[in-house]
Each structure stands twice: as C-alpha cells, then as structure tokens.
Image 1 (tube, rainbow, N blue to C red):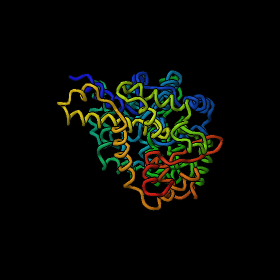
Image 2: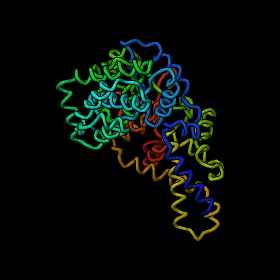
Image 3: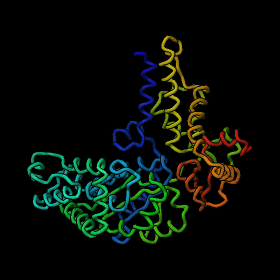
Image 4: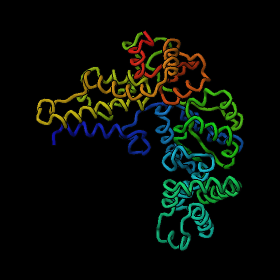
Length: 432
C-alpha cells in the first residue's frame, strides 16, 4: 500500500480519537491542557462534606472537559472508589432526566464493584441484581447461578437501558411514584461498596453538557434536590451557557453549596486584540494546539504554515481544531481515490491552502444553514463588541451552547464569534 495513503488514513483515524478517555489514548495523544483545574477539583473532593459533595463542572462542548475528567478519575483512583462514565453512552440524550441519571449511577457503581471483584456478601449482591433485573425487565430466574458462572449481567442491564425505550419509560414512571426506593437502593449499594473497598466513592458523570438547554433546566432547576440525595461525591458536567443564566446558576450554587467550576477555552488573542488576526496569536496557546495536531498527524502531511491556520480557525476550541484537521484529511483521501493514476500526487499529497479552504467552506456551510437573521445580528454584535446586547437572550445562549459563540475568560468573561462563521458574516456584509 502507498505509504502516503497509509499516513493519511492513520491521521484520519487518529483525529477520531477524541475525547481521550483511556490511559493508552492519553499517553499516545495527550498534551498538557487545563491541568491547573486538577488541584481545584482535588481540593473539593478531599474537603467536601455531605452538604456540599455534589460538584458542577461547566465548559464549552469540545473544550477538553472529558479528557481532563478522565485523567482526574485515574489520578484519584488509588484513594477513592472512582466511577467515570458518559451518560450519553447509556441513554439517548433526548430522554435523559434526573431519574435515569440516578439509576445509571447505581448501575455503574455495581458494574465497577463487580469488575473489581469486591467482596460483597452473596445475599446482598443477589438482592441488588434482582432489583436491577426487575426494573430493566430482565429474566430473574437463575440470576445467582449466572453471576457465579461469570455472566456479565450488568452489560445486559445497560443494553436494556440503552436500547429499550419501554424500559426507560417504565423506570421513569415507577420512580416518579416511588422515588425513595431508588435513593435507598443507591445509598445501600454505596454503603456496601465503601465497606468492601475501604474507600469513599466518587462518581463523575460526563456529557450532560450535550443535552438541550431546556432539558438542563428541567434537571438542574426542577429536580436538583433529587440529584443531591446520593450520600457520596458526584461531579456533573453542564454546558457553559448554563453559567450565563443567572437564575439557574444561583439556584444550582445555592442548592449544592458550591460555585460552578468552569473550564475556559484557551485564548488565541488577548481581549480586543483580534484586529491583529492572523499575525499575532498568543504563542502559548498556539504551541498547545500545534502539539495536539503533531501527535495525530505527521508534520510532512502539512504544507508549511497550514497547521497555524488550522489552529487560528479553531478559535482555541479543541473539538473545532480536530474537526477542521479531520475534514482536511478526508478531502485528501477522497482526491486519492479519485486520482489513483496521479503518482506524483499519490506519493506527495499534502494539506495545502486549497485543501484547507475547501475544508473550511464545507464546515462553514454546514453551520451557516442553521442560522436565522436574528442569529446573524447577534453574531455581528458579538463580533464588533465582544459581548452580546443581552447575554440572557435565549438565542444567544443557544449560539453559545452550539459553539457559534465562544466564551473566553480573563478577570472578566468576553465573547467572540467562531472563526468558521466570521467569513460567512463578512461575505454577507454583516461585518467589515
């Protein structure tokens, strides 16, 4: 096989490895990013009480939260019984609510206890298994025998939860009527695990920030007291737009007894210095973004200067950086398939200005078709003033949630438009 073809195939696959959840992926592709937040999280975990042991962690989608939290989970694992999971891997995001969040916590705790082979008494383990089997409509006959033979019943339970809408609806309706049964089961499981492991529990729930803002409000405004019922430490991720909703933010902080912790996006430019674009980005941020690409894509697959342009068009958002680079690799591979007889191209293909421009056009067009005229006016205002006219306006919060607008932080928060959309606004005459 042509080595250039293999290089681009591998680069495309490497760019699909996001977020970096496994230790091996972090060792292979990870860079030092946002790690100043780790001591803050550790302090909260170590010093919290039962009254403030629920921690809320906010940030843009694709800013590196998942990778950072996976690293944090690994870091504290020796001292705590730690469970890290993505709620979006278990339940359709449109159906996530406070009840199935709590149910999945219970399920993940028992699965981890089973994997670690904790010495939980057989009668209590069987009782818990039958409880899960009942609520996931799984045949209970011979549960104890199946466990003793090594059957992974928890994978079966999780499969039912993920694929069977009837099961999800039944769980929701049943525990709406008998919520205390769910909480008692969770805390019973937690007690047995802590006794068997001799460690306190920390649960980290990722990808709640992928939910629509209306669902976030329902969970964290209408039902946050339910989420505070587990008697162990829990970290929840929420979208950055939640922090802009003053009423919801205050409600969350009052109920949890903690401030919302925010993972900021790395700035490419200092506040109000974008006018120098693209000649004077912050060297520290550029170094991080370039290193992320270097670990995934061989240097010689880029024409000189293209890596810097990709970084600039990302706005400092890691997911956008990866998305642009992967689209570039995809376009090169398509051209290889179209032109297999062109040996010069096949042996020397690179991501050049033409490929990058096509990639940016593709991504920009995909984003622009969803924008209303009101959205465009909000974006133009943010571009000119680094701040919206009304930061509580729902349309602005939606643009922030979907990374059309990016929030940056110094001593104060400020905003800018995703660079992919800037060119669209310029073409339409919305900005100069």
